[in-house]
Image (cartoon, rainbow, N blue to C red; front, side, top):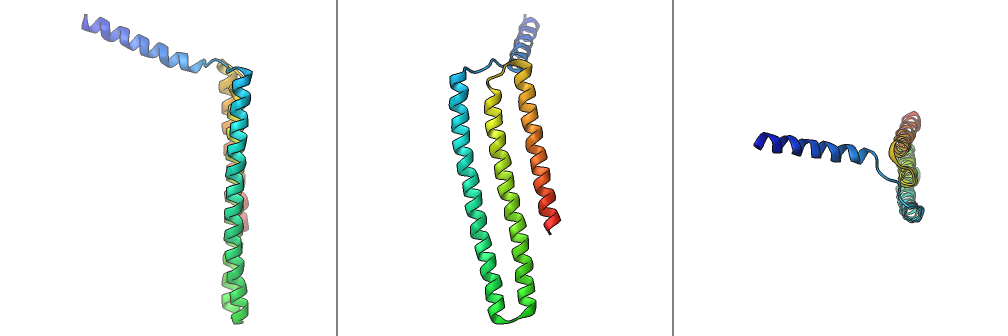
Length: 144
């Protein structure tokens, strides 16, 4: 009896796991609402990343200006190099924020699909996110 119960439990768990692979499509209204919410969150996230980048660059440019006013060539060179690195790092952060925002919206749009089409859509969105992150890394690393 115990073995039979265990077997039935395993079959039920497997059925639930497989059932999750074939998720039903959300209604168009649900998808539209979720996409709008994702777009709003994404816009805020990207705007925050851009604001942070502007703040970091302003600090770096102030350091360059301070070094120039001290008329120390080595200090100016160091501050300029640091500013360039800050610019590259902040551009990377903004690009990643934008890629993640695009991904969030794309995944929500995938919810309009069902089954394998939904899975394929989400896989494509994941691939595009990874590609965008790699490109941002290459731009950042190439700037240094």
